[in-house]
Image 1 (tube, rainbow, N blue to C red):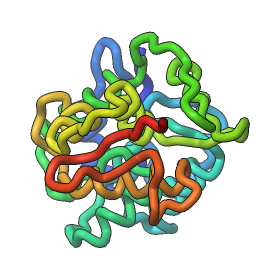
Image 2 (cartoon, rainbow, N blue to C red):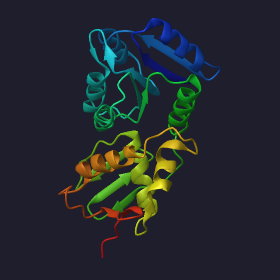
Image 3 (cartoon, one colour):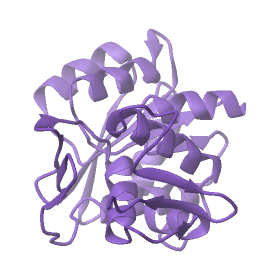
Image 4 (spheres, rainbow, N blue to C red):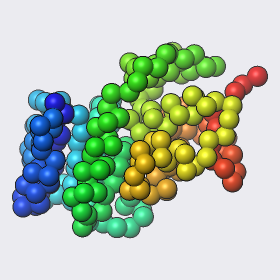
Length: 227
């Protein structure tokens, strides 16, 4: 059973979303305020968080930042009425795994929710030691020079694809498909650039001059093999 947490201040919309997502193998817990959400998340664990960005007592972005600061890598989908690119970038940089602008169809929401839940149990993948890094994807343990590095689910998926193909250029389209869409077409390609920037900031000594996660201009990205 997968447990989904929904934070939505519009109770009618919240009930509609909960009905659409509840099934034989999924349950939905709804809250309408930031205060209620914090109390619930302090007591229960969930497989996916869906957070409304605009709330009567604050912002879902604040809760997202708190979740990530606490080292929680639970997938997060942001819901917002804001359609500016800056709002999307802000959400992704705060650690969101996906971003949906209102109004949206429930079919699109279900597709994105299912994509996040499918990725919740990765296939077995041996721990790797690469230069100063140790990556254990099964235990979600990532270290540089022995120091733990907290990565979101999206960052983990991107890193996994790159290190699986290290030494080879991975096209942007393939990365978008493998990291987000699973064959669907519900993600802005801009999200890839934002996630690469976040991953570099956590792994590279100088993110402005990356040694490992390199851009292959006109193609995509590669995890460089050091000689």
